[in-house]
Amino acid sequence: MSTPKELTHIAGTFVIEAPASFLNGAGLGEGEDRNVTVPKTFRDGQYRVPYVSAQAWKRWLRNTIIEETGWPASELRALDINEKGNTNKIGGEFNPVDFPEDDIFGYMRAEKGQGKSKSEDEDEAEEDRKIAGSRTRALMRASPFSASILVSLRKTGWQGRDEGFVHLKEGSPQPYTTEFYNSNMQAIFCLNYKRLGLFMNIGDRIELDEKKAQEFLQNKKIVIKKDEGKSGKIYEMVDAEVKRKERAAALLKALSRLRGGAKQAAFGTDVSPKVLIVSGLACGNPIFNGLFSDDGNGPIMKVDTLREIVRDYADRIVTPVYIGIRKGYLKNENAVTALSGLSENGVSFVVTTPIDASQQIAKLLNRSG
Image (cartoon, rainbow, N blue to C red):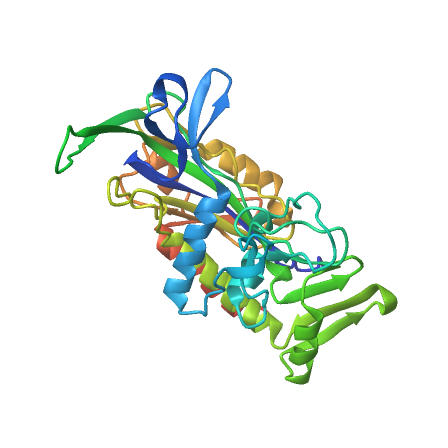
């Protein structure tokens, strides 16, 4: 009899509709476009492709989850002032026990006296927190929630320009131009579920401030899960499994209701997913990638590719594969809905709406273990 697979990660992908949108800016253009406000783009061969940075859309997600849950926010604040009186270090609460946001998205803080070094490339630490790296004993929690950029499915035909004027009380109107895009955008993500509520203070990397750890131990908020002697300790929240389920479920529900983005007053865009695919895994591979295309006439889900992925990873997929789609969005909607009730190597497909997909896997988490 085979041993039941344990859910260790939750992986997925989503697509948003971005019609005439400007969600993440890159400042002013170059050359002839130096007076044009442009969105973030990257080069893919001869193509210029728009995207939203992972830092940006995860900030949308952080804000959404706080609004949806009422959790206390880990607000950014000044940590250190240089000789000129300028802020040179910022950070939040660095408290993953009382602030679920810190547990999910991570943080980094260099201790005083450690000296300067290049920034560590650690998810929220290097972008959102913008805190300098350190040589030793940095307080650092790499985010259990990894994510890609939110990238346009269209490589061509997405460009648009909005020409406007600022009318002064006196003098000539001042022209301005904003480049925007008309596309559909996809991202992938993977949550290391088992790391929620678990904090490793081992070796040179400390995830939980030791002073706070002692307070939490005294207040019976955490326990020592493993004592490695001189190397350090691994701490875990009391009722960690319950907290883990609550935090993962809240994250997935917030993702299905995602809101945010730059220039919403001028280019209002609903960034909640029109497609959301999510499943629980017994491995950390973000397997649901490369599943969408757009020929300029609308987005298409690569159903055969999805089925192939599920066949290959069937021995590591712990839950059904939940496929949430907004009716009328995908060009091949009928082929996608036909997956409902089918299975590949014992893994079933559930086709529903994006919000219901997040709710169903959240309920499954609450029933498990």
